[in-house]
Amino acid sequence: MSQRFRLRAAVAVAALVAPTLGRAQPAPPGSIRGIVFDSLVTHAPLAAATVDLLELGRSVTTDGRGVFRFDSLPGGRYTLSFSHPSLSALGFTPPDRAVELGTGIDVSIVLATPSDRTIYQRLCPGIREKDTGVLLGTLVEAGTNRPVAGGELHGEWTVTLIARETGFDRRPRIVRAGSDSGGRFQLCGVPTDVPVLLQSTARGIQGAPLELKLEGRTFAVRHLAIDLRDSTAPRARLVGKVTADGAPVADAQVLAIGSDQIARTAADGSFELRGLTAGSHTVEARAIGYSRKRIGLDIEPEGENRIAFTLTKVAVALPELTVTAAASAAAKSGFDQRRTAGLGGYFITAQDIARRGSVRLEDLFKTVPGMRVEPVGLNDYRILSTRGGSNFAAECEPTVYVDDVRMFLDPEAGLSIPIDPTEVLGIEIHPGPATAPVQYRAFGQNCGVILIWTKRGQR
Image 1 (tube, rainbow, N blue to C red):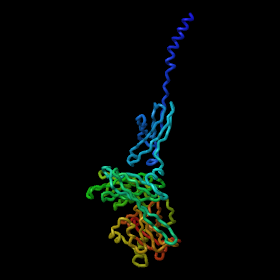
Image 2 (cartoon, one colour; image 1 turned 135 degrees about the horizontal axis):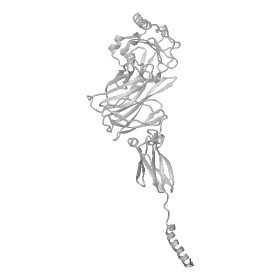
Image 3 (cartoon, rainbow, N blue to C red; image 1 turned 45 degrees about the vertical axis):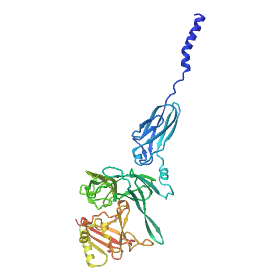
């Protein structure tokens, strides 16, 4: 090959390669992946949230684990935002998040709502009292879910102070808030350490009371429904069952808090409540020997509403008893003998109970000398003796016997006595220990005695 030919070949190859060497290679793409976490409402990864990549106008939806991903992205600075119906309903928009993406880099991030304390400062400016939080929610009309504007929400609770000079000092506390055009409300200053009675009012109609527990949380969400229909509109119906350890619980009481509707479970644990207003309710089930259970639910005005309760047995240490076949009958005759002898105490007979028509057992004690019935929390009551106690405690709780067996009231099971007044044959009340029968005077107990005899005890 001649020198001239080799030179031409080299020039030709150089001519072919030169354009390729002069052109820049395309930059490899990157990606942004991450998880959306809700620190306000669910305190968990947020599924079905919409994540927007603002600069490119792209959107993706998080999966069931709250995960999202944007692929094939050139390097640069991007802005991400996210939204979800549960947050939009509160009128809350999470802040945007800026991301710097290098060429060919995969970036992992977490998109989250601000901390609950940050939200509290933004929603409730000013000095924050100790152990208080904020409640956000929406008020809607039951059955239609239309937002209720101009409604009022108020939370109520009692603060108990103890001083040697004044004893027990109970002071009611109330916080209020209104609902805007979208039905949204924010209730500031709600205590985080005690239950709160929450109630809504709109167009002159008051909704059912609800129990709210923040349980140490600074932020909570509660959506409420209120029945704004005419008072002549048909009432709702609630049916359900009460069980414990897989077995039905008979003779349990089921009641809608704030109403006079109380049902008793049948042998199979079933019950039915009629005449309820629609909207948000707290329904309670209670039975002797079991912890009390409360469930919040929205009752629809039409159709059948269903609910199920699972109670837990309460372990109670009982004193040793000697039981005979005639024990109940003897106890009842003792009631009659003491009543007719007039040796002291206050007696309520089955005829008295029928004449009064009381719905709750505690109602029977409201007119008893030396006794006082005190509301506790939401639809709970405590019976107190005003003639016992020591030191600076002017009142105390008497000992209660049901069918000759001492009843230990557990706060977890409720302070009210879960006995239907129609099941009672007689009640014997001794505000102080002096007039109580000797066999019922507990050692060191100075608060009196209540003896209850039921129809069940006579079987």
